[in-house]
Length: 254
DNA sequence: AAAAGGACCAACCGCGGACAA
DNA sequence: ATTGTCCGCGGTTGGTCCTTT
Image (cartoon, rainbow, N blue to C red; front, side):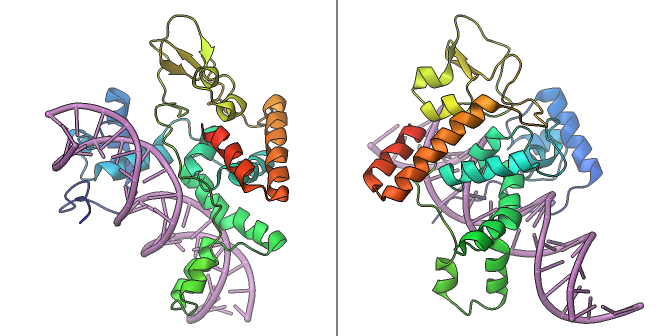
């Protein structure tokens, strides 16, 4: 049962990437672009699984990745977005230019969940669960149940929306309209107001508003919208009106 | 100074949706 | 309509570095 592994693992390298492998991957992607991950390793002369190449590129080698500590603004945004979206790291990462889903996930597990745990007393970090596992699952199912999880509908696929940093801007033509307007995505409108679609092609703006290195993340309009959204969400939580809460979440996910 | 434990983070794994044949 | 493949996602693992004892 289950599908076969993405590739034969026989003879393939695993674990830490060497500088040479990084160089091969960077050179290949510079010359041929991203995508076709399955065939990429062979063509690039890498003894790696395509998945591994994609992960390495997405999380580490991509030129637009922002290095360094998470700023307080980003920190705040992550918390807010997580309360709205749950563990949808890729969606959250899409709102934080230069940050990867893996980075945010790690940051959440190692910093934020712990911090929130202190204030709420209801969450536990992955490190803690890992520790519990190491202790031999003494708590059995309880240890699993203690893990925090926001009960939201299953994540929708967003690749076609292309909030990602790699969306093409080369073939844009015709009149523009925001993507959120076209697809009736109020959430997207708030989170990424400059996203445009022209002739069915998504554009995140000539100035790449969603991709810029916003070191200060100084976007007061978005912040206000986010605040309003967050407040509305909190109010619904307080009222315990689950039907309304569901429709609110549905409207976000459209 | 050394051992033990904790924290962090890069990388792996398996699942499921999208899409083509 | 079915099957197989590719890709992206979230959860988890394990290695390394740091801190505490």
